[in-house]
Image 1 (tube, rainbow, N blue to C red):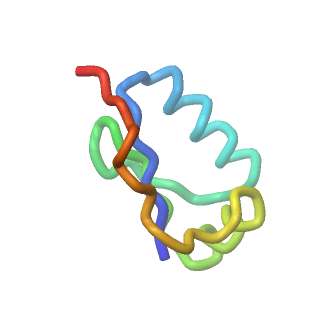
Image 2 (tube, helix red, strand yellow):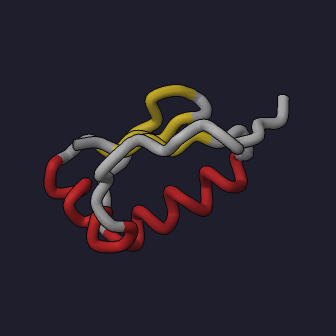
Image 3 (tube, rainbow, N blue to C red):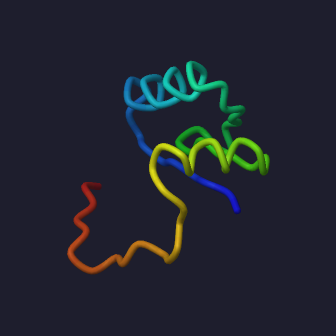
Length: 66
């Protein structure tokens, strides 16, 4: 299992990665806008806070700004 977080705001990414650092979760930047968590122990730790991913998030009703 892995997690990806994407955002175009460097401030938002900074808040997210600072929280990951405080939790001791290793992360990498896959691209300029994507933070990835791949390690098994780190995804398990993240599951403790947000719950395990059981299915993909539906795209219906999601609005993206250009």
